[in-house]
Amino acid sequence: MKRRDFFKTAAVAAGAAALGTESLEAAQTAHPVDNRPLGANNFPEKRPLITFSDRPPLLETPREVFTSALTPNDQFFVRWHMPDIPTHIDEKSFTITVDGMVKHELKITLDQLKNDFEQVEVAAVLQCGGNSRSAFKPTPGGIQWGNGAMGCALWKGVRLRDILDRAGLKKGAEWIAVQGSEKPAYYETPGFIRELHLAELDDHVIIAYQMNGEDLPYLNGFPVRLIVPGTYSDSWIKMLSKITVNDSYQHLFFMDHAYRVPDNECECETPDKLYPKTKPIERMNVKSLIGWPTNGEKLTLKSHVVVRGVAFDGGAGIKKVEISLDGGKTWEEAQLDDGKLGRYAYRTFRYSFKPTVLGKLEIMARATNKLGETQPFAEDVKWNRGGYKFNGIDVVTVEIV
Ligand SMILES: Nc1nc2c(c(=O)[nH]1)N[C@H]1C(S)=C(S)[C@@H](COP(=O)(O)O)O[C@H]1N2
Ligand SMILES: [Mo]
Image (cartoon, rainbow, N blue to C red; front, side, top):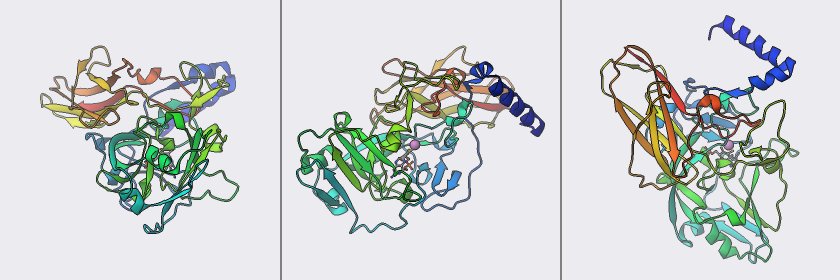
């Protein structure tokens, strides 16, 4: 966008906000910001990633990484709420405390976790509820993620259920509160603690110490993190150090004030008329992303092009991914991988074609899950104040030369 154009747009937006009712129409979505440049290679165990902040570290994965079912650890995105993350973890003395309404309080060492419990694996997508937030207009507060606040990994660890069984739940136990090892910026700031209802914990919920066959990267939660397949990642607590069992919901700051959407059927509202009741974002909606080609790619006329990308949902499973080359008028099915990583992982897709016309070409991808849920056009995604759950049809614009 040219500088002059920018000022024009800004003036129009400010005018609409001042007029009140007009800003109702201004409430909409577009495409998330894409093709941001990578930052310097300043973070341990990470290649250069799109960098929003270094304290706390906020790193986004670039689009071209999303051609494989498992996202490499050194390109996996990073999100922390608090700047004060431990810079050293002693593997011998590190423990996970289990306390509250339990018969036996536990302090589980990493050694015990790896040896005293059944070891299990699950491949699952970790996606921030605010992924793609930059599509929402007007702009909600929060990190202006493009599409790369997500990744898929093979996680290895121990079922949370087995650990709670070892501790023994007391009668009346209903909720657990989970927290990591980092500290709030200063003592009055609420800590990042999340709560889970015991009834929502199935056997796929694990405490993981391995990611894609290696120790968890430090920035992704070394030495252990919670994995809650199918849900947005706000409760996938990193550097997990404490699990407290409670008889009731504790109304903690990061439960009552973040990661919530309007509690109505469309999960939507407008800036002028915020919906009074909210609910947690929870299960992920169906989504796909083209990993290759990326925006601005130059492709040769009549060459053999293979569009590749990933699709996923909250665990129902992907039924099909379709590609459109005519602005969404007609769609053709892409080829899906065999799905052997399971219903919580990425399904990769491929679609071959030969470009026949010179100039700009839009490539769209749309996933549908086994419940028949599908992706709306980006412009039709409904707004919410937190900028959560964007799942508009992905569009990449290339140039045929
Ligand atoms: N301890 C801790 N765990 C956390 C968070 C955090 O701030 N602290 N943020 C959560 C959120 S909102 C996201 S999106 C994911 C990000 O995981 P990643 O950094 O491994 O990509 O971690 C979750 N777990
Ligand atoms: Mo997040």
